[in-house]
Each structure stands twice: as C-alpha cells, then as structure tokens.
Amino acid sequence: MIKGQEELFTKIDSFTNETLPHSILLIGEVGSGKDEVCRYIADKFDLDLFDLTESISNEFIDQINQMQTRSLYVVDMQKITIKDQNVMLKLYEEPSLSTYLILKGTTDYGPIDTILSRSYILKMKNFSKDLLESLIESDNKDYVLKICSTP
Image (cartoon, rainbow, N blue to C red; front, top):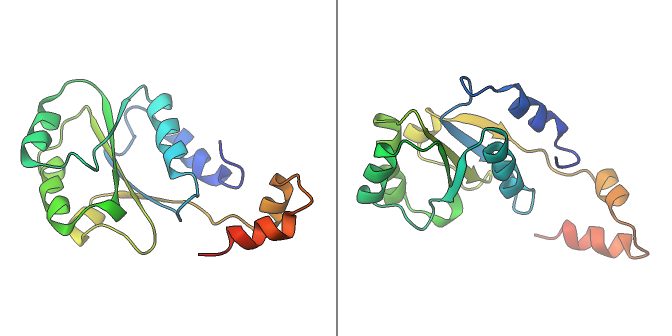
C-alpha cells in the first residue's frame, strides 16, 4: 500500500472477482505509484500482468480476446496514439471475461471519449507536503521537497 493513497486501496479492496471492472482508468501524476497499484490489483485478483503499451495491434488484440487465462493488461496513455486507442476499442466491443485492462494516465493524457465512457475511474491523490516530509529522513528535506515539486 502507498502512504497517502489509503482511500484508493480501500476502494480496490472493496472489489471482488465478480465486481472488478474490466476497464480501469488509473489517473495519477508521474511518480505517484501507478505501477505499484497495477501490481497490487494483479496480485489481489490473481491475474497475470502484462504491459500492452508497446504491443498494440489488431492481431494482438484478437489474441487477447481469445485467451482464457485471467490477465491484466496495462497501457501507459502517454506512450500511445489515438490510432492505438482506436485499435484497443476491440477490447471494449468484444470483451473477454478473463481480460482486465488498466489505462494509466495523468490529467494531461487521458483516453478518447469512447474509452473514457466505458472505464471505471480511479484517481490517485497528490502527495501532501506533510506526508512527503514524514517520509524523508534526511537533513536535506527542503532540497528534496523542492526537487519533488519541480515539474
């Protein structure tokens, strides 16, 4: 669990195998722990975890839809094109019951409206200065906090 994200993990823990959404849009800033959240979901629901970001193609999407293994596919929205998103629509139009998808995005990089309307949205909170201070055990807290807040 990530400190400061307890509410998000409580929501994830409320899902069961029957209620876990097949498509989740996970919104959080770069470095907020989205990869850790994806691993947590995969572990909690006993799903094989794959990064789909570099493999988006019509043929691969067809293979995914035919698989029987319970799998979680993760896509980094910052690294794909609108064309890739349109290819991914097959996962929404012909969903496999054993396939789950997490789209990792930031407030600047979200999916096209068709995917957005079909995704369950989980939003990570920004880390507060107090939380960051409590996590840093160093004489250089001010310097580290300045770096953390620099885009």
